[in-house]
Length: 201
Ligand code: TYD
Image (tube, rainbow, N blue to C red):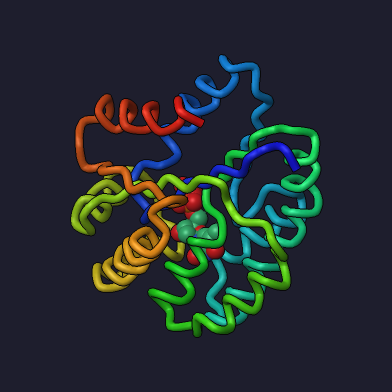
């Protein structure tokens, strides 16, 4: 495989999706083919599963299994073929989100998620992850202003705190791959921080 997998992570409301066009532009200016995608989703089946996952109540382990089912399809249909032809895949969320939401916030065991990760991804791991970090109150405020909340976005401040802590812990244990971006600053400064990281890829 010659391409790279870049993933974007952060709590709901951290603003990660805002930066996708900038990242695509920087990479395309270097003549790199970019495949922009998202999880859960990224394939027709994955998008069906996304609708269920974002709106239906279910057991946290069912949720985890469906996340990985969607991911299996995503890897087979989109990610692996793109990496094999040398493209960069930019995914709005990937497995770190499962560790943060289903494990960190909802209590699914790390061991079970690791097992699914090994099964579904084999050796595939992101080459780079940008973690957009904001204080919980900021994320909640932004969500309240932005849109009708989905199931995850209606959760409590305590739920969001657990997500944030889980993400930050993962970043601390893998600083080579996961770059934390302070997303609680003016948009232009966040964009500059993103550009600096992407420019050296
Ligand atoms: P999100 O990426 O925030 O998209 P949008 O900006 O359109 O709301 O929404 C996806 C939601 O799915 C988000 O709340 C996090 C959740 N999620 C998990 O709980 N586990 C996962 O493994 C993934 C990929 C997402």
